Image (cartoon, rainbow, N blue to C red):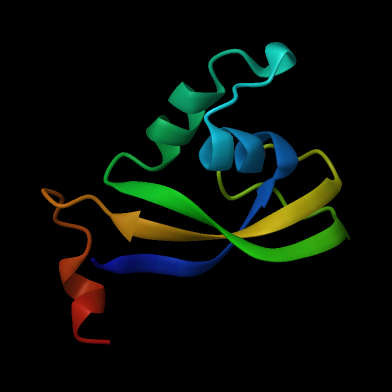
Amino acid sequence: MTIVYDDLWVCTDCALLIANGDEPEDREGLADEIAALWPNAYLVIDHETNEFSWQACDGCGSPLGGSRCKATAIALPNSSVGHASECA
Ligand SMILES: [Zn+2]
């Protein structure tokens, strides 16, 4: 398992989708948005949360302010993005 990025912050919509597979009703296509931004990795939610941030969501790119959950990106087994960070 290769960690690509371990300091990501995702919005609550992304956190719910990643953690539970629940796509919010008003965010149809969210899974596709995340997949488009992370074609060679999947995201895992950490327990740490930030009550409020204006930082754009690292999962879907949403610029809306709100709470953020910490997340880690893991390289997919057949992707090439992980090789650079394996030596880090
Ligand atoms: Zn998001």
